[in-house]
Length: 398
View 1 (cartoon, rainbow, N blue to C red):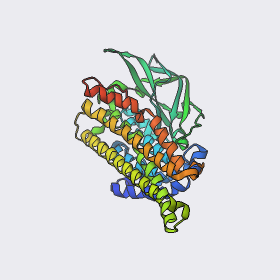
View 2: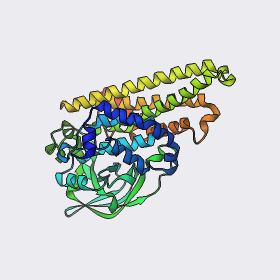
View 3: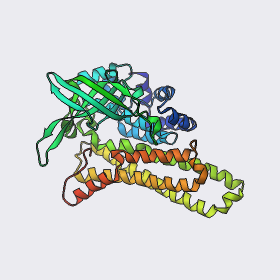
View 4: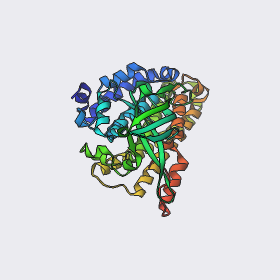
């Protein structure tokens, strides 16, 4: 067992405390992180040093195998300091579970690499051609969050159509080394700027058969890793927890902005600043509104996440109703957080629009999360409505 795993074997509350100790450090460097458009190397190193990485590393490879729910807890905490760090942390660390679904030779190569950390771009924007012994990949995949720190990336590719009414794309998840791809530095965005979510480009890249994972097998719990690891999460679809991965920073981002503004307001109230006191009633109402939306979002997110992980741990199948309810609740959390941030921005006034301001950066990060398919209101609500009326889920990742 390596040093990270030994530290991670401590109680979850100890890991929470380590993450919380990093919040003021991340908050102080948040503008720097946004400007450089990536998470600094020393921050990743600090996350490793604190034992916060590799929590989902399987026992077979010397890990604590603690589960992705703990990763999402920590992402919420880190987001109080910086949304981009939390996003990269949650996404890349939860991928350790995805890696555990591949054949053993793939997992062996991953955990033996210098930086066993994995980025992803699931949407099949490239082309996958079946050839002898594997597949040939061509194309470009965007939004590979944290790829500057990863040796590996998983990209999606459609290899044909699955039978059915209607027919569905036969999606495969190809695991490739970052060194075999070309990085495209196209990450110039308004929100989550520090995630470094660059694109990757493949040109006639051969991927062996064992490095291609069938999404159909993943969704039914029949991936190769289900026969390798005894943790029930490897017998379940990764998509059951996907939305929680994407939304985990949202409440933390809001809480960080709320607490920053509240601390400033308390100082101004104590000093009885005339301009502040003139708008005291409006300020009091806005803090009440934001705090209610924040607490409701935290409870909704955490209750659904823990129930879902408990079902997986018990080997209980997910009904379509639970799947679409989770997606509904996840996008409601995203909307609530945006609504609360809008209120904070109005309260911040002219000072809130400055580039160095924590409130406007938090607002942009939350809007970026909502733009991700995992935070898409229309897709999740349509899928929920379809199921309650007697139809099927309409989202691909559900």
